[in-house]
Image (cartoon, rainbow, N blue to C red):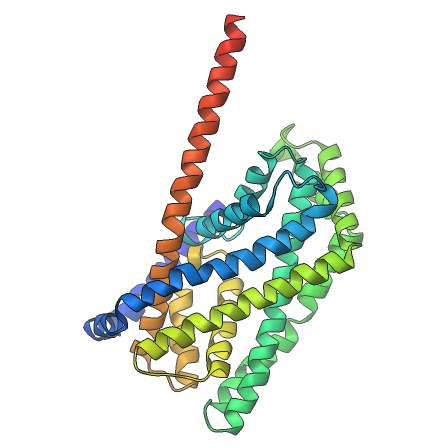
Length: 337
């Protein structure tokens, strides 16, 4: 994954450089300047996205954490750290999930159920992305009929969407019946050595199967994720309004759904760098948004990611430092005794 992330980062940077060379950078800067300080409202608004995801995670954790050792405020912070790691650090999009498991372990929760909740959440995100794309395509049909979107773009998007529909269903079936963790342990055992025991893999498979039987919890968490994704459409609507190019709410939702699609497809590219920008240019033009304006919207989202992510990453590193100091003092006390 590290090698894939490095390759993805290089390809994403190359794509970003190409877009920058072909764009009117001073014009993009003027567009961002026209938005002014009002763009900062995107930072507190993002809390809604994190809160919806955190509530869903709490719901998935409830059967294994009835005492709420990891309460909503803590899970909200862990959710923000996961997102910041995925978006700002040079890791593939699974890096934040690994950190999320570590943070929940700090609250005394066992590794298998926490890891299972994160895996289930990732699978739900995959399903929700498909539902969100389907919503975007339906809205694009209406926009195309009204003359606000390019009909040919809809046709090019529909075919790969339909062909890839079996992916989420196959993923669920493998987790439910495939003993995926045990099979991966057998495959990677010679390289992992004793670092991961077969008992841990079996426990993880058992937790995954138990989680998949909790249909109500999964449905609630998935619905909250869908609302979280839809909330991202407001960021596009708000930014374009500030930039003097207002669009309808359906147009903003269509654009957000397609951007989320390309970012999740290119999950090995850290932060979707270059991929997000190319998606804004490509799909923005289909909705009547010129390339420079689309890049300005993407830059507004990037600035929001930085403004939200850096303080969270600092808080995470501070927490890691405090925990390390406590462990060192504890070991020092044991050695003296």
